[in-house]
Amino acid sequence: MTFYHPWLFWLALTLPAILALYILRPRRRQTVVPSTLLWRPAAFGMEASRPWQRLQSSLLLWLQLLAASLLVLAAAGPVWHGATASGSTIVLLDTSASMGAALGGGTRFDRAREEVLALAAGLRKNDTITVIAFDSQPGVVVRDSDDVEEVRRAVDKVKPGACEGDPGPALSLAGALAGQYDNPRVVLVSDGGLALPNDRADEDDAIPVDEFIPVGDGDASVAIAAINLRSAGSGQAAQVAVVNHGFRPASGLVSLMKGNYPAGSQKWHLDPGKTCYLLWADLPRDVTVQALLKTDSPGMDLLELDNQAWAVPEERMKRKILLVTNGNVFMERALTLLPGSEVYLADTARYEIMLRGDYPYDITVLDGVAGPLPPGAVLLLDPPAGSPVPGLSVGAADNLISLAPVTGSPLLAHVDLADINVREAWVLRVGEGWRPDIKSGGQVLFAHAELDGRRLAVWSVNLHRSDLPLRPAFPVLLQNTMDWLLTPGLGVPKLVRPGQEVKIMPSPLSHRLVLEDAGGEAQELAPPFPAASWMPTGPGLYRLISYRAGGSTVREVAVNAYSALEADLRVLDPRDTAGAVGRDEQTGSPSGRALPLARWLALSVLLIIMVEWGVASRGR
Image (cartoon, rainbow, N blue to C red; front, side, top):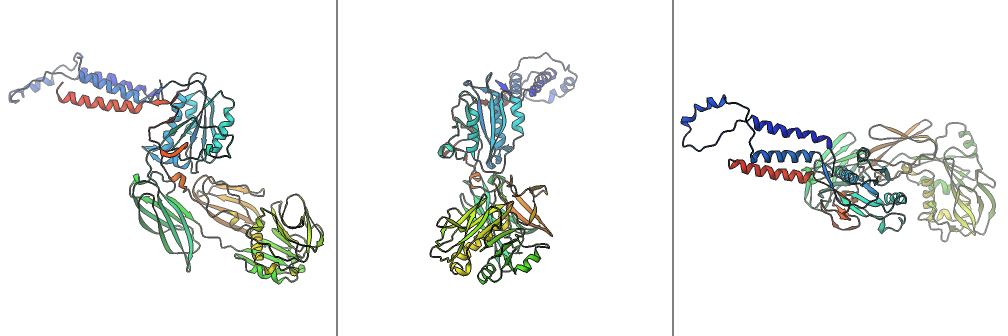
């Protein structure tokens, strides 16, 4: 047996205090009399009686000493260790969002931490424990330790996160570490609801789980599942989806903020497993909104992480496109029809003059122009023979053309090249960094590349000698190309969750990219370019600031914590998700698990107090 808090044995000083009270307390024989009238003068003599008495054996005294002793023992945190096989233990500690759910006076993760410490306290001589914490990604907390205090210090630094739990990478890491042990025991401490790689073929190196220790109790969970904005007249409307994942009815209030100002509140009531939609109309346009959920009773929702959500209006900043041409009506009209774009025209002479000053255009389309290349993204249309950019060579014209798409090209999504006639095109010879999009007889005609942080695309066809501009594929191909050259919204998806890797695509004219969180803390993503990926660790409203010559642009990014997997708070064995696991039920091999005795000692004390009350009521 070991103890979590051995320093609390100082509470045993209460035992001599109880004895002292019994020694100092005067003791008199109890007698039943018909009246107390003649006994009142005796009270004055009792006050002058001698306080020190000889200690006499009493059932009440022994019951009180026993209760105090058990309370002291419970405070020290005794742990009973069953028989265990010799060897090392690898513990996978779940730190996903659901582990922050309320449990008693703490959280599920607090209980999980106690289970890990109990496992560490149950180690035999020469045995070690390794703890791997995981949510979407794993990390080694402590390795090959046989010291309970070392494990305690390391585990105390770990906190539950806001990401979904994925045990696959953690089990792969455990499998890599297991090679240095002789038949190690793998223990998963979690509230379940995870997809183990035993059912997934992509985790062949993962080690199986030998034991599952469940933590958690209750399934009450209400969350803001989504918040959407749409245009409504001269303003916008917000729709908030509230879902009840629990198995009991729940009710409460959702409040909406428009910027820094309240937009009103709405009540809701949901039966188990149901969803409701709340609508706020007549909101100002281009204003970020935040929804806050509150239940009528704390017991209706054990997980507060997903009780707020943000929504950001669609970006309305237009990209500037310069078409350098000596006359191309097809391209000019097609570019004008692109949403979110401002199109400017220039001939070759004016273009060369514009390059000498500040160049404000995000994308430049060079129609039959050899160069020089401008800053920013470039589309080379019908380029003349030569080598306009590194790794690209424009060769002789080809008259026998049959367009064939290259599988996987991002520029050809939903583009149908069937029955398109091209009479003349230049043959492209592409080098390192270039990816072909369309070929003809093995010869490259369309290609794209990202060189030194700048995106380039080449169409070697002459639109005047092709029916491509008359085909439905042309506007789709042009839209795909423009979106690839300059990704809308910096490439940030509309829905971002904690733990999701986001690749930022700043404007080619940007020279610096900074990320700010809700607290104002800044993180520089670029330079160098391309910008570093970003992985938010928690929900909130973030700001991406792109600096360019003459100013900067700011894009707000909403990161919402809702996950249907994490909002389902049922405690499930991930090896068999068909049934829930009880709060105190342990699955897997029970050998070697330490059993905390504090709760059982507390129950014993309660029973002793009840016995003492019965004895005292009978006058013994």
